[in-house]
Length: 468
Image 1 (cartoon, one colour):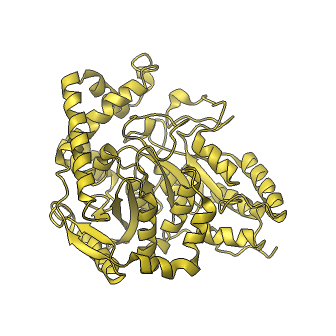
Image 2: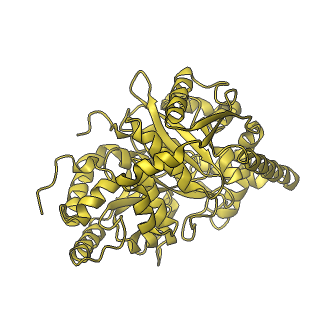
Image 3: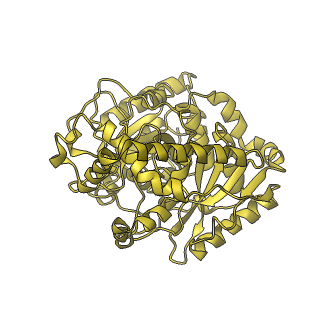
């Protein structure tokens, strides 16, 4: 095999997979390079809860032997990945960002982890996350550091997933999204991340936060890579999807894109939204229209009620998920997660029923929107990359909290898939995230539209400054 390229860590999964399958790059060498990069950089970035070098090298050696023998399991064979620390991993601590679970060692893998393993991927480790997948890290666990700017939010709760993938400390990651927790860190770190349709990716062996709101989703540096990850964790035919996304087929994809109906609610995406976000969305609109998409004006159902309801909706279900340890071990919980659970435990049944009814109504109204359009274009959040100082002000302002999640949390309640994609940068060079929201069970269509966007732009190819 030839010597490793100096910029090997910058390759997308798809391109690295081609090199590995052609025998031009060794999975063992790739794994060693990734582990060395983690050792060099993650002391400062803090994206990993724990690194698993022995397992990674064992899997890399096995992958190399199989590939050399002509036994290629999938496009992920030999690719170094990592998973959020709420996925059960056999024989490896799975703590969910909670010191209370620091010694919890599962006896078997989560379904998603097992599918990655069966596909031949190489697991580098478990990625850091907020406590119990809520908004804030436990006070004893340092926040991962946004490689685009240490003073700025790196997203929650899949914070480590965003930082590690952006800093090239893994080629992709699997996170979870209960109110925006795949999409926020994707936007903050210039990544592509998918909140899948509710129920399409198994949550067996995934630490629960809110049963009806939790979604498992892939994060990577391109929509094409997200589609590859989705094919494996969703149990799809990876060979068929590999053929679909081959570069030689991109012309066919673009041809099929002609006339795709893209819905935009100009009022919804501009009311209280930072002008820099609005301009970025309009630029995406032009790109998709020039590629053959048809832009249609729509009226998105009012998201204010369902986003305002989200914390109580989540709180009730989180209280159920934690009843084995809360309030019995409440002193070991951080203040943010404790407050959420307390709110849930105190909510009256009649009020919770109204919340569920509002969520179901919103879901039906969104289903009706997709009778007229194929996707809906929106921001991920109303402003780009807030500082931690700005975020601290949200704690005492329910309306500001609602505004932050108004483009994400409603689709956890409705179950519709949503893909976060890079759509530009602020004047200070901080990433901006846009969102493609789709019809239920058309997650792959969102990825393909993301591929069209990324074939006409290069925002997603930009890495954090200062990281070679």
